[in-house]
Each structure stands twice: as structure tokens, then as C-alpha cells.
Image (cartoon, rainbow, N blue to C red; front, top):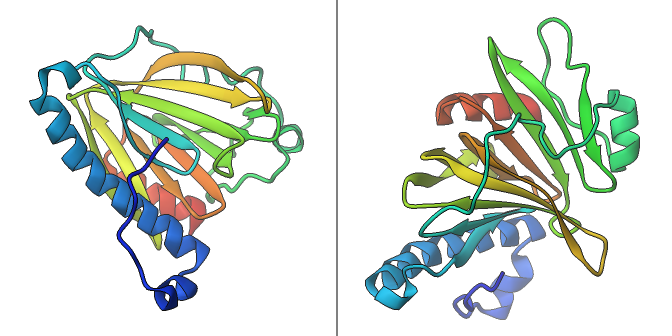
Length: 223
């Protein structure tokens, strides 16, 4: 994904910016470009059908399109393979999953993609929510397609910036790379989603949930 050049900064300022603050600044610049870029593209007839590749967070890339690609309704865990125990899923993914404190029994089914992702379904009362943790920013890619009916707004989870997608349905694709090729695992419609990135890991919480409630749950997950 190409991002337009950022404004010039002095060397002294650059030296004081940490990796996490640099990631946060990248997101702010990207969001600013999206607003301007979409306005320009929609004003030019030939550009209205073009994909605007301007924003994302962590391992999740978001593309705003004029019309959504063909997709279908599918379970929250579609494309994630068979279920595992938590220990087995963590061994496959290569990292330990961060989970909130549960009232009652914790989830019993976990899903993993080697070296990249762990996911499980948690419950907010009677509502199932898919919690996904993606390692790093490049080994795995979750791509979302949104149209003009989908609202994308900034969100704050503690000290970490995020994005909240709501309103119209959007399309989710899971893509995984083996180093030389990128393979598409699944394409499905997705509901409301909160995304946030802590500088090391990308978190994704999907389901029938408001922004305020999603942020409350996110604080339980990552503190």
C-alpha cells in the first residue's frame, strides 16, 4: 500500500519519536489522506470505480470501493480451519494469545494459522464475538472492502489508535503469504469491527457490538 510522503520533520524531532509513536503518526496521516483522496476521486467520473488504497492498521488493510466484491454470508470462523485447544493453537501460531478475564468457562475452541494468527469466539452476554490476534504487520494480511454505506471512524483503545467499521456490510478477506505468493483463504461478509494495534500485534473484534461496548471489551483484552 503506497502512502503519500509525510511533511518534512526536523532531525531532532525524528530522533525523539519512538517506534510506537511513529506507527500512530502513520495512521493519522493515512486517515487524513483518505478523506481528501476519496473526495478527489469521486469528483472525477473515470475514478469512481477505482479502488482507493489509502488506509489500514497493523496487519489489516482497508480498501474503499464503489461496489463490494462478490461474497457470501458465512460463520465468524469461516476460513480459519479446524478448531484446536488453546495450547495447540498457540503452538501453531507461535505466540500466546491475550484474553480477557472470563465470567464462567473460557472459550474451548481456538483457531490458528501458522506463524500468523489466533482467533476464538467470546461472548458478550448472548452475543458471539470473534476475537482475532494477528502477529506483526506483514506475515499475515486481513483485507477489508468497504463501500459508501460503511462508516469507518477512528477509535482509541487506551494509548493505542484503532478503527471502527459499522453501518453497511463490508467484505473480509483472509490472505496469507508464503514469502513468494499470497493465497486467499476465504471471502465473507463481516459485521461491525473494532481494529487496534499495540505496536506489536493487531487485534480485531467482530460482531453485533457498538463502538462504546467494543472499546470496553478491548480494554479487558489488552488493558
